[in-house]
Image 1 (cartoon, rainbow, N blue to C red):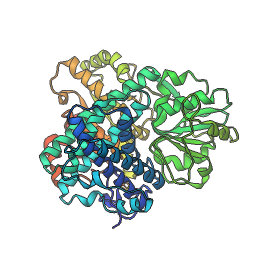
Image 2 (tube, helix red, strand yellow; image 1 turned 60 degrees about the horizontal axis):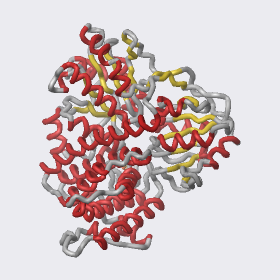
Image 3 (cartoon, rainbow, N blue to C red; image 1 turned 90 degrees about the vertical axis):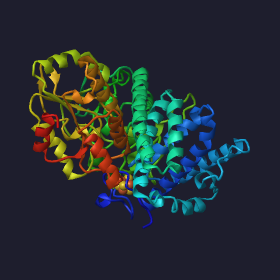
Image 4 (cartoon, rainbow, N blue to C red; image 1 turned 60 degrees about the vertical axis):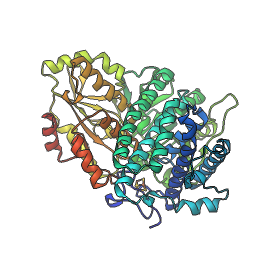
Length: 548
Ligand code: SF4
């Protein structure tokens, strides 16, 4: 076995990828990702000493940690060269930290992750084969260390997007440093379990920060009937989560004779006033990430991947796909060039679009979304009144990730099987399983309230908190609210930790339970929170409507 990865739902045989990833990740990249995380732990161990004395983690280092963790999220970056270069940068940071710490303040003995060094690619590659997940022998300790690591990857993603919009939070960087350092040495299962729940608390802070960064930079999302059809001009398709990249691209392509479409999680851009004001902001094209092979092919124009998810690139669009930011794929152009006035230079992408035919239409019509928590709060009184009158019996959160697994049709079937007095709250690409169904409305309230990207699960949590306050309940589990979560990557793991931190019980998780949870740790979670895997759509609907 030359690699081991079990961080996502798609892991082979529900156990672990050991000979290349089911996602398409090579053995080399998988090991380099492990080494990058290992090296970040070294930085954390060195930085922790200073942080514990009240030291401030500046944006350069904090965002380096965030973005590095983000690069290792499933389907974000497949490019081994980018990881080698990133590890080189991380080693330069550890050298600097070692040199800056006064004598006698270095941990003694210095753990290997904080002391190893290499300046040659072949040495980095060799080291990468020695630091994987299985280095932790005890399966329960390994399970919790990895749970925390995956949560930190999610925090890195959200905190990085916020930082790129000017909303850097040193407290989140401090949490990441302390947590990375703690999982490097901690072997007590109880303390690691608490740290996992603490990661859920930090998750809410990271999502709240990103929600604020988006609202203050781009305006309060509006409830929007977004177009799912096409226009007649050539276009650029933008996917991923980076709304800053979206803004820069729209600014630079104004008047260029092309349109800009969203795909996958970038659908959230459709709701922000700052984007809707651009006349060449077109609609949302296609569905969730896993359908990109056919949808990118039929789009005809260039595709900009700003973060996860990118999947192994097919020949039909290989010559017109680009990555930027944390995303990467071997042999695919990565846009990094900067304009003299600041911002990434998308000139080549825009020029490429002009020479392409327009997209092939996939569908037509509109769909409604944009239910940020502040929009939900505005109708919360009305919804509570509908609950009191019996017109709304239950809210069902169906949120998280979509994926290739055929079993995920379960979520479409659940949406269809829910009675007409159930309202679905959703965010993340899981919604594509049912978002385009016509499920009607209840006295003007759509039965599907779509908030946006996975990080917009914050809006669903904030809405639940609002309902709890308004009803005077002390326990959120007393609300007529059930959670049926679809997970795939580590951001969804983070959202799950956030829900557990809030004490939410009876969460359904599917289509399978995480392979990284050992039987004992899973048992502890089930015992404390009654987390369960999905069953049949009809059976689960009946149970959820009864609050079970
Ligand atoms: Fe396997 Fe998922 Fe890891 Fe890819 S990210 S190697 S599919 S476990």
